[in-house]
Length: 263
Image (cartoon, rainbow, N blue to C red; front, side, top):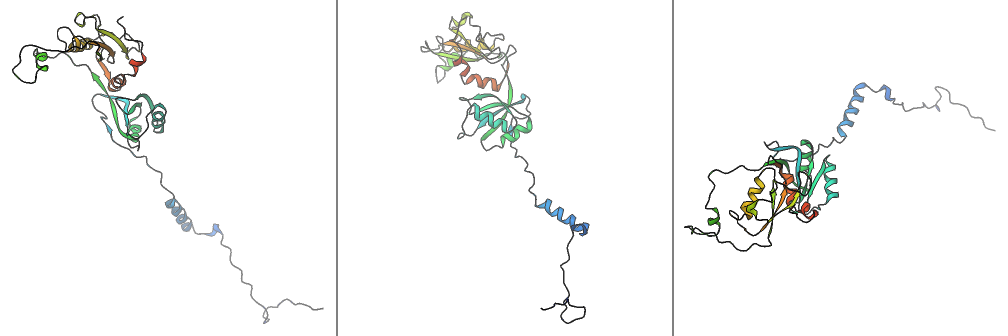
């Protein structure tokens, strides 16, 4: 039976036991901890700053606050769902979708949201909506106008030659038309009134009736046998917006309406 002895101090077989000292985090100098924290912060990705673009017509005299026209690039799909999603991605709300005159939509946005939307890869450009106003009367009107448009070369021959225009329908996008005006000879109809949202586009300003007379009036009209249809986009003061004019220019409200009416 063998016996084992513990090595005694000083004995040749004794070995000092080397233990690895434990590094305790709470004994690290404050400077080391600070360096570690700073290194960690420096390595963290910085918060991305949203890209911004240029908004056409921003802040102009006739700008409509909070209203913008958004035109998409040609290869991007345009419908109510995609327009709503795109506007919402930047915090905006779609108010109209244009499918003919413009490949885009109108939206309510803040200035910041509009600039961010302008930088979106799907967007060709963003333009702030503008107020529009019917022009007043022109001093010294050119009474030779009709004679001038039917011939290329001078001198004028004092006559206006015009071809048949029966069956032609012309939409007057303006302040409406007084369809009972004698100069229109019963060839004026109501189409759509986007100001009052009904189908009685009565003229409360006079400008639309004046334009209708230039187009199809018996005396001063160019197409003297054509029919004019009133599409009202300007109020009784002759004021409206670009977005409103574009919306009615697409023809969608007119095609949704009942047949044009004389009443």
